[in-house]
Each structure stands twice: as structure tokens, then as C-alpha cells.
Image 1: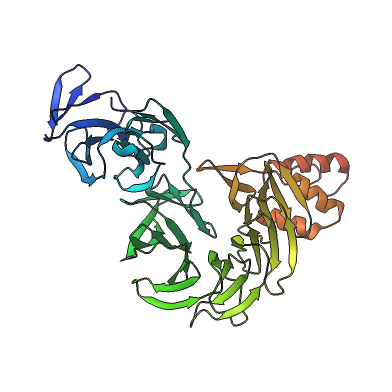
Image 2 (image 1 turned 30 degrees about the vertical axis):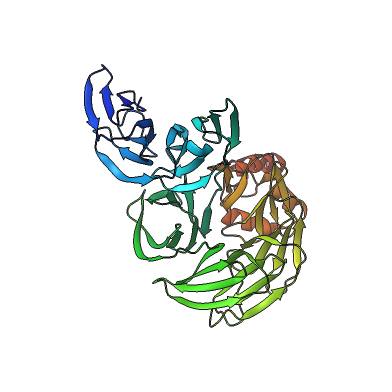
Length: 477
């Protein structure tokens, strides 16, 4: 049945597929084949459509070793994809908005494919044919039934891919879509291939597919929508390890090599480092104000490299454990490193002295406006902290991906959730130490919310009938 219950699809061993309406009346017959049409499934083709809008796509598996795509009117909507097996089962989870399907069959093989049929990955090979595969409702588990009579179950995880620059943010939705966000505005860019890497610099977004790179210019169409225009694209079949947009150029890595590409796809610079590149971020401010990148290596070293002319070293920080992530502060004066043992180190950009270190850190972000405000997750808690020692802890799950105003954007199971956090605890610590300058910084940059009303009531009760201007107005206080 289609998602809205209006259509029933029947596949036949004779090589045809029929579409029937809810009353059992034959509507149309899809293209005939001389091989059995063995399996089929409906996938939602629009991630925002509700069940009353006919936007489902019918995927059909043929024993001609291909899968084809049809709409509810019987029209072939996409190019058929050849596969290297006889398909016996197709499975899709509606809750994943058709982001991927499981194709199983002969040879004991199952593959994960995006909604266009392009292969993303293979499941472990089995000893006998697979007659049925079934995805869980949330699409995070799959069960497969084999000719041998046994059943195997696997967990599926799709890495959360995202990037940000200031108040701009982009993340992968499913495997083929990019959602772009700025404040209350959103935009969507849909691709026919699997999105592997994304990076952004200001209003420019770079997207890496398995065989191509797209460069987009972002803008504001109206009060609610973000527009996107592809300004460059070029072929890149290499399997890059890291992918970073720097000014008007693109930096990619492969093992221990760094390569700089123009937006037209021309390789401009190549250099070899002494260890594999694990991550790349925007660089710290250099003395001459030149564009730079910060690179984390597998041997633990952190390098700040000038982009031109041939990645000269601006500074080198030698460490013992491999670098997993590098996060740069918005003013590029402070940077953070998370190593392979999930230990966080925050460094001063010019002196490279350690400002803060914490163990068992799962995620970390700087505040978009106030660089000395940080947020990190650890052991089921979310910690808001200033680099001069004030902190507050919240019992929240998820990895922080953006911290602006008094709210934090958390990634939980590939879903983004925004949580507004009360700064009362930190404010009270500042008041207790007489640090009114830092408290004023919070007022001016983190926004005023209900926490301030609570504080105002407390202050008013202390002031009583004093003649201090505004003392009788809790919000003024």
C-alpha cells in the first residue's frame, strides 16, 4: 500500500507491475519485463509531505538485476539502477523520510542505498540467499531473514554531518539533502547522490558527493526562506578524508597530504605532512592577518598553516594523543582540541597555553558571540562554562552543535533540538564575586529570558522600599 492508502501495487512473476486503487479497480500497468518483478516498496519522496499528499515513489526490484522508480500515475521518474544480484526484498522506513532503502537478495548480500538507488554501504555477507529484510520504524535497525532459516539483526547509524560559520549552519538530512539555517530562516538543497562532506565559509557552502563537488552561494529570499545558487561544480572522485572551505578555496586531505583547489576544480597547492590528517578547521589569527587553517594530525600534533603560498607552518603544537576534533572560536583568538581519548583542551591562540582541560567530552562548541563562553557534553550532562571559571550543569543528552543567545542546539540521533538554558546559576556566581563586568556581558549578548524575571523578583525583595529608581519594577531591576 502507498503511504496514504490510495494505491496498492502488485508485482508479478510474469514481469509486470500493476497499480490498483482502494476499490480494487486496476488503474495502470507499469512497463513489462521478461524477468520476474520480485519485490517492491513505497518510499516517501518529499520529506515535508504529509500522508494526504500523493508524493510516494514506488521502487521495484527486477530479476534483470536492477531497481526502477515510478510515481503513482505509473510514470518512470528516475533512471533505473543496475545491481549485482537478484533482488528478493526491498525495505524502507517511512520515519526516515525515504532517506535510504535496503536491497537484499541472492548471494547473501544486502546493500544500503539512497532514495535514488545509489549504494551507500554493504551489510555483512551471509551464507545463503536473503528472502526478506525489514527496517525498524525509526530506521535504526534492520532484520534479515535467510534461506538457511536464520535471522540476523544489525544496528544502522548514519553519521550526523554538519558545519557552521557564525550564525549560518548546514547539516545533512538523511543521506541526500542539505538543510541550511540562519536564525528563523531555512532552506533545502537536494542531491541525487550521497552527501559525504560539507563545509561553509560565510554565505558560501561546499558539498562533496562521491564523484563531484558543488559550491553554493546562499542568500535570503524573503522573511522565511534561504535561497541557494550553484556557482561552481567540478568532478572529484578521490575519497578525501577531510574537507574544508577556506575563503575562496577548498582544502582537502588524503592520508598525510593536503591539497588546495580553486572553485573551478584546479589543484593549486599540494604538500605532505609528517602524519595522517585527522581534521581541519579555520585557523587562528596570524600576525600578518593572512588566511590560515588549523590541522590536527594522527600523531597528536596541531599545526596552524598559512593557506598560501605552499602551506607554510605558522606554529606547531606537539601533543601525544591523536587529534579527533579542532574547534575554532568566532574571534579566532582561542581554539579547542578533543583528542582520541575524548579529552578536551582549550588553548590560547597566540601563547598556546592551556586555559581549560576536561575528560570524557563528547562534543564542544564556543558561543557564537562571546568566545569566553563555551558549552560541552560529558557523561549525560551539558555544561555551560566561562573560561574564567563560572559554570552551570544541566541533565541533557546530545552533542552541542551551536551555542547562541541563551540557547544550545543539540544533535540527538540525527535530529536537532534547541534547548533554552537558564543562566541564573552563573549570574549568581558572578554576583557573589562582584564580577559585574562579566554579568553585563551576559545581559548584552546572551539575551534576556525568564531567568532575569526570577532574579529581578529576588532583588526586589532584598531592596524592599528603597528609593532606588526602578526598584518597584521587577523587569527594570
